[in-house]
Length: 70
Image (tube, rainbow, N blue to C red):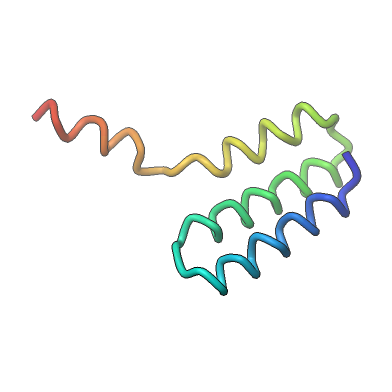
């Protein structure tokens, strides 16, 4: 996937973050930047999407699911 697609996606998500307010759009914009970095390093489209998906995963997700087991 061309790197410019990732940067356009990051820009659109960054502007959406500024216009809406929820913090999750910023996380997605940063994840798109990670996808762009994978593209610059020469990885294929599948790896780029996987890198972006892993970067978009909230770090506190596992903690949220474990709270009910205490």
